[in-house]
Length: 438
Image (cartoon, rainbow, N blue to C red; front, side):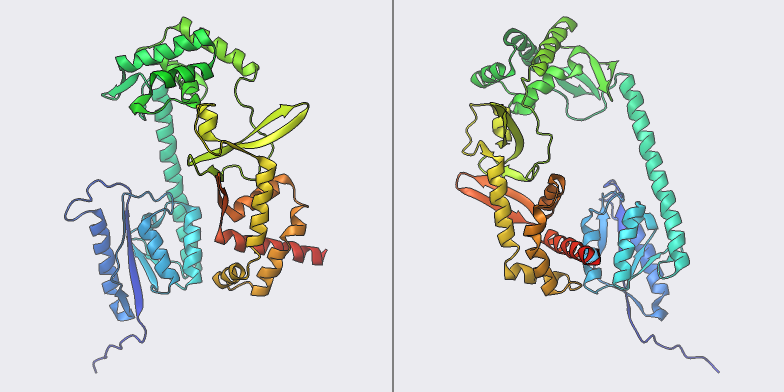
């Protein structure tokens, strides 16, 4: 009696993910991504009796490293998994998905959450079993180990080349061009460099030098404007005396020097004196709430924390980077703002915004593990908790809640992080629960 095949009762939707680290060869009619897909399609076809079917969408990342998860097709795949469109993810080899054990753990967590199985067609592993998980972790550990070893080899080769004085790539400094992977003097630019050193030695002031450059229309490499930071970098660059700096060590370079040793030593003696006298702006060491998130809207530049001392008192500011680098002549409608005042205004706005009913509802709807009432209660407890926090913790919470603060002559605009509000609500609830237990 002939056995009749039984059709599967359920359909298993399979998505193939392919990745190639470089773009080399992707223009060919049949490339590495095609080869990976063909092998995966054959495997899925062999499981037709189990109800496996291939989804129509292609998830291919060509020219993307497996060392991180910042890949467009992978993000699209994870979004479709979250939407319940996929049951199985099929790859040619595990390292096509990721080479990082930490990232792999994140992916498996998402797979488990949505009931998705992970299969490698050349390595018979299945994440639905404990043995499969163990084997995959071991395999990825070796993949990450190999990746780190390769990175160490590259670093060692880079260091050895630097010690020989070789140019190891990147944008050439002002005064040089790169010809056949070596630095060659660009005479017009080299004359600009010599003028910078000569005038700095004569004036002993970067600010004065900056005004002279602006008046003469002198520019840097590729026509870029020379600001304070650029001048300091030029004056401190060992390349101009024919040397190569690497990790604090100085080596003789293969290229020709533009500046003689006597000129270099004179310039650096002045720099050392100016530094001792506080010629450069002092940096604020204590935590500042809006550091790295506050921007000047007029110049579209970051604003950095600065301070001045007068009559024994310290006054804090946030200063536009365009002004800080360009000096007093820079046209900017904002220039600087008093730190304490703008921090108070921003926090007042944030406290009012996170109490809005529509924002509370959005936070609750996005994460159904937490009750709407708990979200509202947690956010309302920010005021009494805030004053008890250390400055470092206040800064952390501000960066958790705010993505950017734009300052203009007409006022300020605060941009909140939606995911940060959810995290804050959870943390505040944890604090309440700990207090109850105590």
